[in-house]
Length: 109
Figure 1 (spheres, helix red, strand yellow):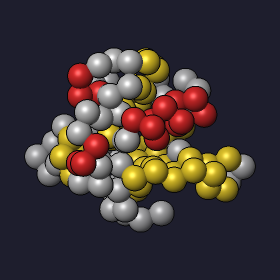
Figure 2 (spheres, helix red, strand yellow):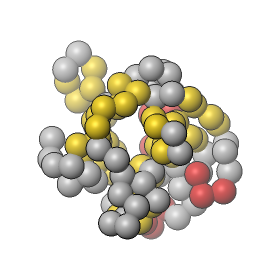
Figure 3 (cartoon, rainbow, N blue to C red):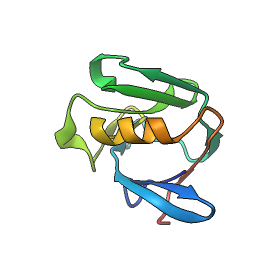
Figure 4 (spheres, rainbow, N blue to C red):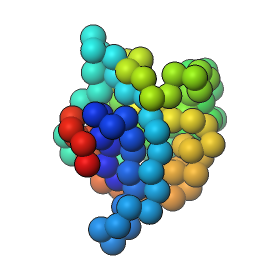
């Protein structure tokens, strides 16, 4: 999977082709989303609170998760995590496994 911070989109690939694309919220300027290459380290259903219905960590204290504020998707508002609509994170959660590579880039895809 690739997250484009510039586009505020998450892309899921299979065999080099984009198979899904989702809008995301990213870290605000004071707490930016880290760029780099990671992998899904842990998955959790129904973490509650601001994390929505799913949580997938990619770095200590950073994750891809749902939201309790869907109107903020597409904005730079998080503490560095990648927020998704709950319906989107539920779909993505079922499609990826622990160990799935996550690449976060500042620019466009």
